Image 1 (tube, one colour):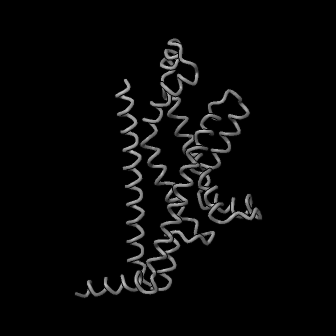
Image 2 (spheres, rainbow, N blue to C red; image 1 turned 90 degrees about the vertical axis):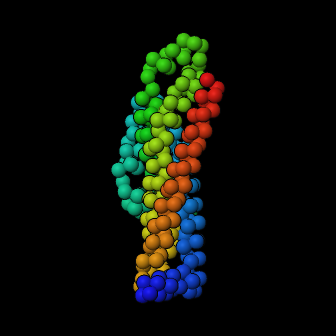
Image 3 (cartoon, one colour; image 1 turned 45 degrees about the horizontal axis):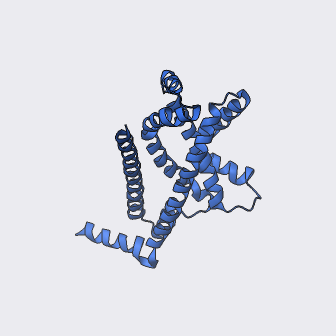
Length: 230
């Protein structure tokens, strides 16, 4: 009975009193916004960086390797501080926009490495065979290289989504009220972090699980359609 009473009181003071659950709901919205926006734009920029890494221009290739290398090696918190207090300081951009730019570049650097490795793993002979069949350079890429690269990179791609979501947990540095900051605010008022921490942890786990399932389903659907065409 003591445990039940404690849980009832904890739920009331952490979630119901003063409608504190709304802090977690609004924090969830910010977390989703940061994660999906950063991952979407990170994918686009990751493709561009991947192309630059495979460029025949040595200067472009070298600059891209240096840039993505720095982004990969710097911790997300340090990178956020650099963009917020140095690079984008005084631009008038909101904290949310600065965070999206930071995590977009961080995500794109990791994805560029993954995409490049996946593309390079395709046998050169398959590309040459496609060219001998009359495929142009781009046709050979999209019909031979791209499908194999996507299939190979998908497990790491799904993992990167979860990592991007985890990176967003440091945005409280800029006073952005994501789920992590919501837990901090609730805990500071109740001095009992258990319920808020458990709920937020479960939400993070469910988001990662749902994202993996959706991306996995999309990959299986694409593979099934390719099989039908063959």
